[in-house]
Length: 279
Image 1 (cartoon, rainbow, N blue to C red):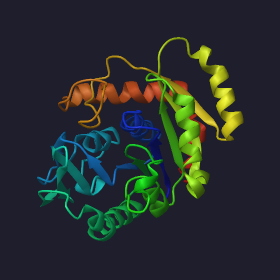
Image 2: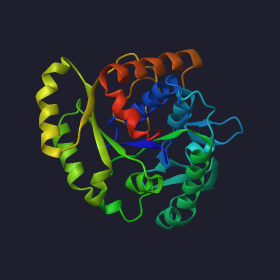
Image 3: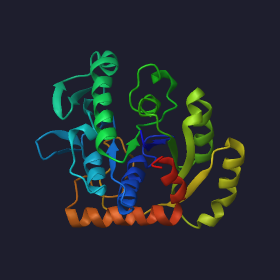
Image 4: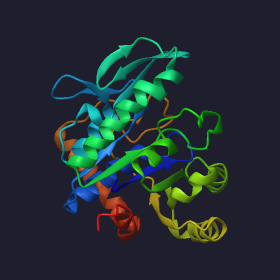
């Protein structure tokens, strides 16, 4: 497929934020992009025009892309009920009230729904912008996960790895993640350092070191943006960029444009566009 995937070195690394900005940025360039997250764990959901339930993050990413939110953009939604279980929504409808047998679900019904969604997006859009979940380096999940590198392989897209500078340890997180990816490491075509506070010039040595040590280009360093009124990506976020309710259309569009502007000013947009493989 034409497109790219944004994965993170951890939860709350800014994957949803970056995907939202890329959707608006590429839409501004006249590219018909479609957001996608195969599986999202969140209690923040939105209803589509036909009454189906998806994650609010993917609904907002659709709007950033200037599209109507649809269930195929988030075929699996897990809504936590307590520490040990979640409701499963499949293609926008309640499928099960708990996650017993979820491992089998991912490898049968779940992956089938994901493949159907990917096929539809490949047919109807210029490119896909995929959001991962948590970290792709959770090696204990590799045999049955359907949200990180499994999806990058299914869609056959390159991966951009995002790291949260604000929480510290970003260099170790990048290096450690790459070391644990095995053969999937070759899919990682770029690194984005996110949520940097202060003078970005002070981070240049870190960028140079990262590129020299890993051999993967750093596509840019994004500043920590204040005043962007978008909900947290999921219920597990330690921080967020705004409220936990979906903003009105005017406020949302202002936030989409602000994020896209930050991406244009701080990332190598030419390199990102080339990763879409449109030509």
